[in-house]
Every structure is written in C-alpha cells, then in structure tokens.
Amino acid sequence: MTASDFTSAPIREVFCSVQGEGPYVGVRQAFVRFSGCNLNCNYCDTDFANPGTCDYEQVEGSGSFEKIKNPVSVGQLEAMLHPFKKLHSVSLTGGEPLLHADFIETLNLALPLYLESNMTLPEQARKLTEKVTYVSGDFKLPASLRDIGSEARDAHMENTVECFRLLRKNHSRDCFCKIVVDNSTELETVTSAVEAIVPYVSCVILQPETPIGRDVTNLRPSGSIQASVQSIMQLQKSLLEIIDTRVIPQTHRMWGCL
Ligand SMILES: C[S@@+](CC[C@H](N)C(=O)[O-])C[C@H]1O[C@@H](n2cnc3c(N)ncnc32)[C@H](O)[C@@H]1O
Ligand SMILES: Nc1nc2[nH]cc(C(=O)O)c2c(=O)[nH]1
Ligand code: SF4
Ligand SMILES: [Mg+2]
Image (cartoon, rainbow, N blue to C red; front, top):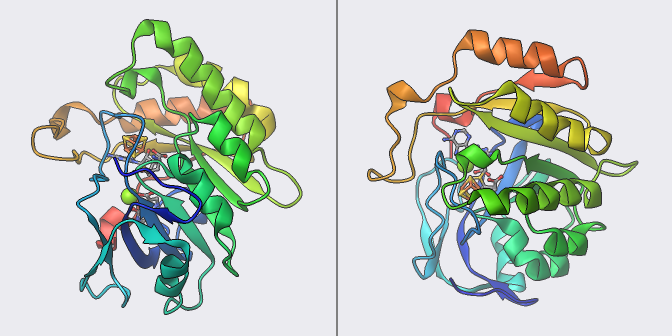
C-alpha cells in the first residue's frame, strides 16, 4: 500500500453524495475515500485497494469519473473539493482514514471534518483530536474480523476504547458509535463493548449488515447473515437501558447514491 505523509496520500475516490449511515443520514457531504485498511471485516462492502489512480466524480451523481494519479497532494484534494457546494461537512473515510492521519492533519478546509473510522489506531487518532468535528466510530466486534486471533482480541478492544476516549464527544465535537450487526451478534459482546465507551459517545447506532461482499469470492451468502428484526429490536431494548440507541440501515443502498 502506498504510504501517505504530510503532503500526499493514496485516495481511492472523491465524490459528493448524501450521508447514508448513522445519525447524520441525509446531509450533503464531500466524501474522501482513502486507500488501504488495517482490518479485514467479513462484511466489508468497499474496494479500497489503490489502483494507482483516484476516481473523481466532479459532478455529483453523474457517474462520470476522472482518474487522478495517486498519491494526491493536499493542494490537489482541496481543489477537487472546490466544485462541491452546500456541504454539511467532508467525510474522511476509506479504507481506514486513520492510516493517513498525518495527511489529514495538514488539510486546511473551510468545512468541518467528519471522520469515519474503525477506531483501532490510537496513536493516529491522537493526531486528530483538534481536527475533526464529527466522529463516526465503528466498534468492530471481534467475530466480524477475519484476521484476528483470540490472543489479539484484548488489544483490539483496548485500542478501540482508547480511540473513543481520545476522540470523545465534547463541546465542539460529536462522537457516536456504529456497530454492524448480523445473525451471529451476541448481546453480551455488544453490551460490554457499549458499556466501555458510554462516557465518550452521544449515541449508539445498530447498523444491520447489508448483504453485499467486497468481491464475489468474499460475498457472504446473503440468506445466512442478516439479523432478524426481533433480535435487533431486543438488542436495542437492552442497550437503551444504558444509552440512546438507534437502528439505522445503510440508506444510500436504498436509492443508489454512492
Ligand atoms: C467502508 S467503512 C470505512 C470506514 C472505516 N474503515 C470503518 O470501517 O468504520 C464505512 C462504514 O461502512 C460500514 N459497512 C461496510 N460494509 C458494510 C455492510 N456490508 N453492511 C453494513 N455496513 C457496512 C462499516 O461498518 C463502516 O461503518
Ligand atoms: N452515501 C454514503 N454514505 C456513507 N457513509 C459512510 C460511508 C463509507 O463508506 O464510509 C458511506 C458511503 O460510502 N456512501
Ligand atoms: S469495514 Fe472499514 S475497517 Fe472493515 S475492512 Fe472495510 S474499510 Fe476496513
Ligand atoms: Mg460506503
């Protein structure tokens, strides 16, 4: 994977769309999708590999992409975002954006930054505590991680909680947690995860897994993975004992925007 630094980063795509997930569903955002990820979630719907170029959709919804050579510089990215108007914020996603924290740290955009992260890289998260206004942090349940052994689970949980502590909600930042749920999601696992981050987040979003694989070899058989409505409702009822908990699917999948 092409490394990034303070001046440039490998970016997979840049486009203007509507936030499809979490409590800010419906707001108009620029999306900057960084290449590369440090995890391998079994449900991942994103091809974040760096093909050498960044797909740039200059006209929102047009489906017409220009290919910009990677890595993209800070100045190039700022210019690419300029045509996008009436934005709520700029979503920094991926892949895993925390892998590119040095690059993000140097961005000088007029708009608030909205970080979509797997929350597993605390030393990178530390760099962005004064930089991001919205934190959409996933809590990756170990069962959904393909490459994690039992010996690494404790460290994974500790890193996740530390990222939420570092990027916690405050007077000038919102931080919330999204948890992707499938038919194997266990109440006890989710409850202990949520209890560990309650002081740091404004709400928890239960995000039903959308049965889409990253590629045909990884495509999980859609019939076997989705959690039942009843199980998600029971999970929400339990979590509402400790925090504002909402069920929000990936809405962009419903109307076909990027
Ligand atoms: C592609 S990830 C990129 C950001 C970051 N790496 C992360 O995982 O949070 C963006 C969001 O999409 C969610 N996601 C990916 N595949 C999904 C699927 N098949 N169903 C539901 N949510 C999915 C992730 O859980 C995450 O909240
Ligand atoms: N519309 C839309 N909303 C999103 N929210 C999080 C996304 C992501 O892939 O990070 C995403 C995405 O890919 N598209
Ligand atoms: S969902 Fe996020 S953390 Fe998981 S593999 Fe995909 S990009 Fe990486
Ligand atoms: Mg997406």
